[in-house]
Structure formats: C-alpha cells, structure tokens
Length: 322
Length: 307
Image (tube, rainbow over all chains, first blue to last red; front, side, top):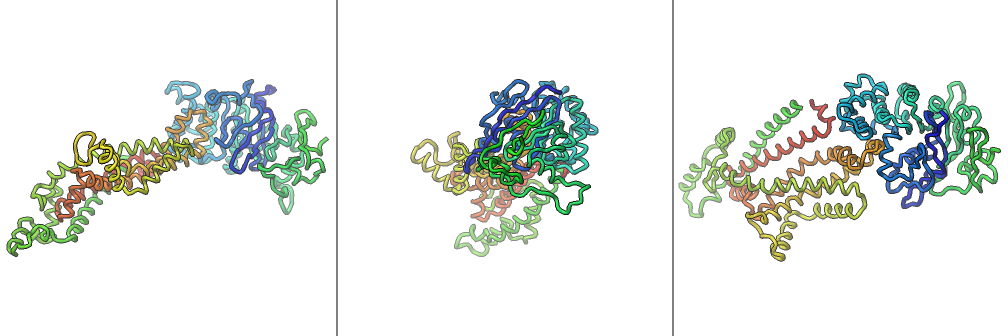
C-alpha cells in the first residue's frame, strides 16, 4: 500500500489553436500508490480528463501537447518513451475507461473480438487461449454467461452491461494503473452503485491502482482513498478522502463540498459558487479562484499561491492557509 | 441472412415485371417505327405489308403477350431495323460493355477507398487538399467534356493513345479512365467524410487506449464503420456508372450496350430498346442487391434486424 506507482511532477499540457495557447493543465503534481484509488475531482473543463489523456499520451493531435513535467510510472518517465514504446504500455500497464458506454465500443465487432484484440496484442497468446482469457476478463467484471456474451455485439447489450465490457477490455491484461474517466456518469443511480462496488472488489482481487476522475463528491466518498481537487488546470488541494470531507482547507474545496445536495438539510436553494472559471486562454496572474473566492485578499490577485503541505499528505495552494 | 436474401430476390423479380410493362408502354409512346422505315413513295399496301412482317399490325395487347412469353423463354424478338435476333446483338455488345465497366468500377472503388482513407488520416495536408481539389473538379466537370478533352490531349496533341474504337490495350485507357472518373470523386468524398466522423469517435479513442497500432485502428476499426454510409449511396453510384457507360461508348465509338441502345432509340427499334433497357434494369437491380448484401455483411445491426 505504500509503494508509489505513478508520480506526476509539474505536468503542463496545452492546446495550441488559432485563438492561442490554452493551458489545459499547468503544473500539476500528484502521486498514486500501488493498489489505491486516487480521485481527481473538479468541475467541467478543469483539466481532469486532459490529465488522464496526458498520462496515456493520447492527447488529440496535433493541437494538444505536453509541454513540461514528468510522468514516472514504476521508474520510467513516460514522456521520454518513443511512440512505439508508449504503445506497448497502453492497454498493458495503463488502461482507461471512458465515460459513455454507448459510444465507446465499436458497433461492428463482437465484444469477444474487441477484448480478444487486447489480449492477443499484449500477451501474444494462441487463438484458442485468447478465448479463455476473454471469458475470464468478462467473468472478472461479473458479466453473466460470458461464454454466450462473447459472441454478442454491443447493440445487443444494455448500457450497464456495455460499461462492464469496457471494464473487461481495460482489465483484460491486468494493468497496474487504471484511469477511470467518469465511468459512472452515464449510468443510472442503481447501476452506478453496482459498478462502484464491482470496482472496489476488482481492486481487492487484482491490486490495480485507480485514478478516478469525477465531478461527483458522492462517488469520491465511496470509492477513493485520497483526492486531488482541480480548478482551472491546477490542483488546489490534495488530501485523504476523510480529511477533505472533514476539514477542507481551500475555499474552492469547501464550496464544492457545500454544493452537494443533502437529504437531511432543509435548504430551499442548492448552494452554488458565483461566477465562472477563468478562460484558459487568458489566465489571471494570481490565484485562479480569486475572482470567485469569499476570503480573497490583496495578494491573491497578484501572485499565485505556493503549494504548502499543512499536515502529512494534506497540501493546499491558498494564500489564506498558513 | 438467407431469408433476407430470398426476400430481396423476390422484391427484385416483382420490380422487374413492373419495369417490363413500363418499358413496353413507354417505348410505344415514342412514335411509330414505320414512319422511319418506309420510304417517301411507299404505297399504303407496302406499308401494310411492312407492318404485318414486323408484327406491328397486331393490337398492343397481343404484342405485349408475344413480348412477355418471349421474355420468359429468353427470346427478345428480332430487330425491326437489322432483322437479326436481339439476343445475338446483345451477345455481341454486352461483353464489350463489361470490358469497360468492370475495370472502371474496380479501379474507382479501390482508388476511392485508398485516397479517401489517406486524405482523412492526413487531414489538411497537401495530399488531403489535393484529393479535395480533384473531387470537386471531378464532380463539377461534365463527363463527356472530360472525355473529349482527354481525347484532344492524349490522342490528337500528344498522339499517345488511339482516338476511339475498340482494339488493343491502349484503346482501353481513355474510356476506362473517363468512366472511373465519373464515379471516383463522389465515392472518395464519402469515404473521406465517413472516415473523419469515425476517427473522432470514442471507440477509436478506446482502440488507441488498448495500444493497438495505427494500421489496425484505421483499416479494421475505422474503415468498416466509415463505409456504412457510402455503401447506401453506392447503389446510386452504380446506376450512374451505367449512364456513364452510355456516354463513354458513344464518345469513344465503342460497340457496347450503350451505343446499341441509343441507335435503337433513334430508329424506334422497339424489341432492341426493350431488351437493352430491361437488361440495364436487371444490372442495376442486381448491383443494388449486391450492395444490400454487402451492407448487411458490414453492419451486424442490419443483419440482426432483417433476419
């Protein structure tokens, strides 16, 4: 539980468009331990998905580019790998689950074909052994009657079942790191709960480390050991999940947790944060949350706050935290 | 799948019966062939004689009965103009037409797929812009003008190729080339835009996440999805190919079906027009059937819905 599997240091990724350079992530650092679930939380367009795609080096070309930093997986800096070497890591060492199960499977190939492809590519198995591996991957995700399902096309399956197939593809080569990009957002609430329980179970069986990208604090609470909160391309606070919920230090984290609806609170209106995140094209010189912050000081508008570790494993970037 | 094919075959037969009736009626609306066959000094007796010889003195219903029963037995009647069995004339002309259309079809499809995919994967490069330019040019230039200009350049000015007529391999270059050029641009653009749509999709992203090499992503995952949309219009493009064949054969003086039919139309040679049109209808329907079967093969969702 203590070995560090992935270390991301000062990662910067930008998108170069005609309008200029969008700094999608700007100096992001975090680490993920073996077998733990690390949550990346934040609102839309804060850079969560771009962080995931940067780790896989699958940014949309030619606009997206990693312009600085290190991504060290088990001692290897992924940024320095050649394209071919990187391809050998994808699907084998690192895998990813996409958000929408309705569109992330190829409609013209059977699920067996799509899982088998990974197995054949990374494990170099003979055809008759591939099928066994595929069935065991389906079984890992608790898909009923995998021997029959293997010949099904995606359109013959429900959304929840398809997302399990996507999970089977991701887990088929037993990766060490799984990036789950809002895998439950497109599912309805009961299926969502099942899926999360399933992944906790799979993690116990396989000891895979998971980066769980979400905007939903409820999911974070159920799933993650540690959390990083992102805002406008930067991590503003990192801590153990229980610490984040009990004692959020950054005003943005506190505001985010506050805007989760509660059944036991009898508020008339749901709390929401005033204003909009800044444009990534034209970022303010100081703290990016300053224009929306309640406890804003003079210095917040002028200089970016340093990241300070206030207690073991709890770091915050805020001028208001001493 | 078998049921799907049987149903489509039955539909094809019904369509053919309808077409046969339509052709029979329409061709008779074009006027009386006797007006073209008789001389200015023919006496009424001579005209009556001619009508009897050609079977045109019988009522339309009787004529249709003769046409229909002949058809079933594979007898298309006799040309009014040349007094030869129509079947023999078609036997001469059809292979000549196929010698142009088959290579033109194969060349244009292979090129359309290859260039469409290359253009989509190298978007906004020199190659992509080149493909787009050629496609727009090809779709906006009338085919017959292209053919005449090619003739002027390669046969008259450069003297590399023979002007027209059938002969050795060099006689095929221009007619096959122009026919391929009729179909290529439309198909190429469809493949390109289909590929662009698909390459943007989530399942292509997932294929990359799996670590698959780009070659498999493009030719296995993307292409099969990208050709589903172009396939639906392929039937129409096929019909265009036959139209293109008529124009090409006339310009290059090629003794094929197109020329045979056009000459028959001018002469109101009913049996020949009927047979040629019907044969073309059979070919169009046959190709559409082929497209439908390919479509079902490519897209499993269609296959499961229809069976």
